[in-house]
Length: 282
Image (cartoon, rainbow, N blue to C red):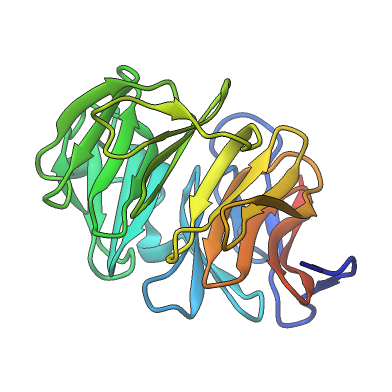
């Protein structure tokens, strides 16, 4: 599939993504673009008209014209784990300077928002767990790996209760109707249900970020920055190359891939690439 070699930039309508290179938290300037310290995840908003960028200092929105706003609701927590299930947002990580202690002190556990990130409520593992890996399956089942150990945790009741499964040293998960796909150092693994064990997925590249489309096709980026996607027959094909490390990746709709790399927030489609929000460093 020809993705096009030319990258365009969303111009005057767009914002600028400011990435701080220093350590420690910093407040956004009174004027100018929002300050984002590090990006953990990117996903399509439940409304379908924007992207949600989960960062070290809150969840931000990016619209099709490149307009960047946030953090949503003024919430400045470190969203280490983030996923969208239906119209609900789920997150995990650490509280920010102004995060309510009701969401957890030290670790957020699992928190949820039913209004697009304007308000958040604690769900499970409050103050105990920090999920760096968190995703949702097509049926709304949540899957995660917490910081306390490499067990695959599963919830079928919107995060209230969790079942402990196999040991799985994965850096990312993607779930389709065919099962669970885990990105690991040794390659992409697959399990039909997460209980019977994981096996290497034949022919798959070694990915460090992976996502799934609604039709079950997989999208990912390998350790060299090459973007991959499975076709209708399950074969892996290259669909682009990132510039620098990829901080986050998401399969959006039937054809788009959104990544955050050295250029900023980049929308990749069959017709070419668009830098929605350019990245600048301070």
